Length: 310
Image 1 (cartoon, rainbow, N blue to C red):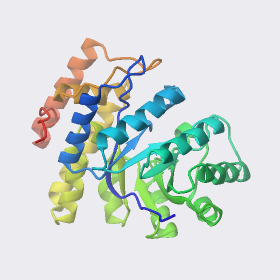
Image 2 (image 1 turned 180 degrees about the horizontal axis):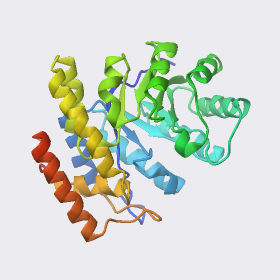
Image 3 (image 1 turned 135 degrees about the vertical axis):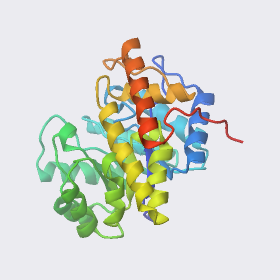
C-alpha cells in the first residue's frame, strides 16, 4: 500500500442522508461543486459535523457512497468509520475501501476507557479491515474519553502499517506541536480546531479538518492562501473571524447552526437527526443578525449566496 497523506484545507462535511434514508443527489452535487470551487482540498465524511454518532450503520454507508458519487474523483473523500461497536467499524472500513475512498478515519471506541493494549488491538484490526487504504485517527478525548497521545501513535505506527495520520481536536496547541515534531513529515498531522489553522501552518502542520468549512469554506481556504502569499495581516483577520464564528456555532443546537448558515446561502441539507434538534425561529433570527454584525466588523461576506458552478 502506498500511503497518501491528507493535507491542506479539508471540509468536515454535513451528512446528506434524510430521515427516511434518501439522498438529494442534486443538492449534494451542488455542495461538492461549492467546496471545489472554493478551493478545499478534500472532504471528511461522517465525522462529528456529519452526526455519525446518531446515525445507523446503513445511513453512514449511504452517506459515504453518496459523497464518493457526488465528488466523482474531483476531490478526495475520507470516510470516518469509528464506532463503539468494533464489528460496525470494521464493516464500514471494508465498505469504504470497496468504494475507493482516499482514506478512512476513526475515533477511538468511546464511552468506556480502554488501555493501550486494547486500543492497539482495535486499531491494528481496523487497519486490516481496509488493508489498502490509509488510516487516519481522530483524537477527540473530550468526546471519546480515550486520548491518543503523540507517544502512543509513535508506538502504534510500528505495528499498524496503514496508519498515516491524525486529526487532533484536543484544543491543545502544545499537543499539536508534539504531533508535528515527533511524528515527522511523513505523517499527516491535521489540526482539528478552526481557531488554530494559522498556528498549525506556522509550526509546519499538514493542514486542518474544519467544521467551519462546511458552511464557509472561503474563510478557511483564505487563511491558507493569505499565509502562503505572505499576507499575514489578512490571514490573521480571517483567523480571528474563524475563532469568533466558533463561539457563535458552538451554542445550542450545535451542528444545526452551521447547516442553517449554508441553507441561508442556498444549499439546504436535511434536518438534523434526533436527538439533535432544529433551531427555533428566534434562534435563527438572532444568529443571522450576529453574522451580519461580524460581516461588517471583519469586512468578509458570510451569507453570500452560493453561485452555481459552471
